Structure formats: structure tokens, C-alpha cells
Length: 350
Image 1: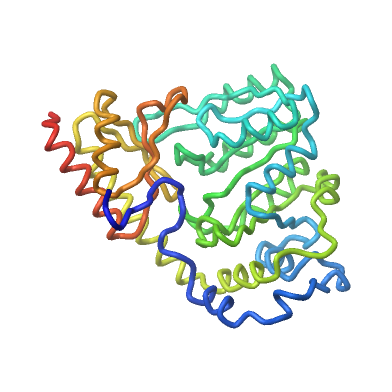
Image 2: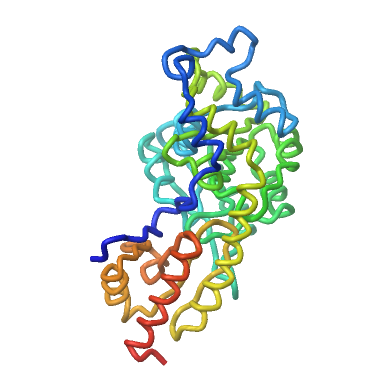
């Protein structure tokens, strides 16, 4: 095993957060670590929810904070899904979706996510047909989706939301930002669809996974969730301060995102140039790729020997011969590209 391993398996942002976030930690005082928040006296949940509301031009009352996007997903499902209720999720999705449904005794229906010529696509017709058939209490939509990397196009999203008026719809945007950091659609979606909750996180784009901060925008029909997730004593004040610093560092994150986009293009060229490999285009900070089935174990061992760790799927329908590659730093991405090329040459792939 190499001395300095390169971890490209958990979709973390290996560039790290903006310098201003480190400054928050360096200068933290007693008020952030020893005192509860007092902002409830102003009729708001926190300074961070107030800032997010201002940035997105929505009322602070519809902004919810949580312990990462994971926490908000669980809160939503636990709030609305009862034993025996149906929840719909994508066929290719984060394993955690099924886990949350099982915790509540829910019945899971999977709607298709299909491989296209260059990228995966949502089968919108099938999704709506299954919704009419099963009348789901909750529908999870991941955009960009993990692990396929594709997003639901705006027109398709609105069409889906119009067809799911009787369900709680969770739009999981954990990988928001890597395909463009636009926010202007949030206000209109939340206003038009009261049954919608949009969940995001500071873990991915803002590189603050270790501080565990998620946030959500709730439609006006989700007042039950607002009460379910309320925290009278506030949230982690140190994490909130780092998140505010991240929001103030737009140029830093735009620069990182630009480099990641360039490196994705490089990896597409390299991977698609290898016999038996196919990389799908992604709007997230990772790439899903098919690999030659006969070389799966050998590739895993070879990369591990070189100290490069990527995600190999096992016992998952449709994904057994796929890998998911997190976009790391430029040096890490180049090392992976060279390792994949060397492996193909050593195996004599044609």
C-alpha cells in the first residue's frame, strides 16, 4: 500500500474550504462554543437561516437547518412516512434512501433511471406512471443524482412536481453547485409547489462535510416538518459561522468548481479512450463509469497498490460493474488518469 493514499471514494471536496472558514475556527471565542444562541428573541431560528433566506429571497420561516443533508432527509421521511406508506426513489440512488424508508416500515417503489448515450436520464413517463399506480406518500428526487451524476431538467422537474401534487416531494440537491451555482429558481419552486422541500448541504460544494451543516427550503404545506425540526436552543454556532464564511467566499468556490469541470473533461477523455470503459457525464463532483467485468477485481487491487481508492459497487443491481470516481485535486485526478492508463496497457486491453 502506498504511503500517501488518494481517497476518491466518498464524494468529499478534497480542495478543502475557503481560507475564511479556517479563520473562523482560529478565532472562535466563548460566545460560539459556550453560549446558546439568543436569536430566537428576534423571531428567527439562526443567523445562518436568516442569511440563506435573504440570499434566496424567501421568508426565514421556511428555511430549516440540520446536521447535514442526511439529517434533513431523515427528519422529512420520519415526519411524513408511516408504516405501510409508499415511498418512491430512483433505481440508481444513494443506499441511505432505502435505509430511511425501512426505519419507518415504509414500502419502497423504485422508478427508472436509464443510461443514455453520454449520461443517465430520468424516465419521467415511468416515474409519473408509477406515482399514479402506487399513490406514494413521499417521493425522493436526487438532482444531481448519486451515483449517476445526472440532473432533472427544469421543465421535466416542473412536470414531475405537477404530477405529484398529492405527495411530499423531497428534492435532494446535495451536489448543487458543481453544475452551476444558480439559486434563482428556489423561490419560484417553493412558491408554486407547497408540498416540496429542497434539501442542500455545505458538505460538498462548500467542502465542510466534517462540520455537518445541511439546510432546506420548505413549501408552505410542510408546517408539520417545521415544528418537527425546530431547535429551541439553536444550532452549532461554530459550524454556522464557518458556513457564513463560506457564503462570503463565492470566488474561491467558483475557482475550485472551474478546475473540477476541466478535470472532469480530462477524465472523460482518458476513461472513454480505454477499451471496455465508459464514463457518463456528470453535473456533480464525481463520475460514474462502466469497467470491463473481467477486470473488476484486478483493477481494484491495482489501484489499491498504487494508493488510489475509488468506489467499487457490489451486490447492487445495474451497478456491479461500475465505479464512482470523486473528482479530487488536479494532482490526484492526474494520478488516477495515469494509473488507469497504465492498468489498461499492462492488461493488454484492446
